[in-house]
Length: 65
Image: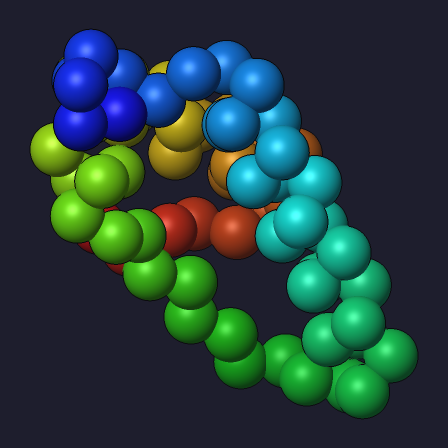
């Protein structure tokens, strides 16, 4: 991201897949209140809106950035 200013689509998809696994684990433990926070890499990426939207659609997590 820091070289090109964009997060590659493969990384976006991998991140969403990992967060989906976390969501499933959280459900098993009956965790209801979860906050997901984006790093500086996401905040500075030119395609951050695509990243945030993809994660929201695939996981239901609304990332704070």
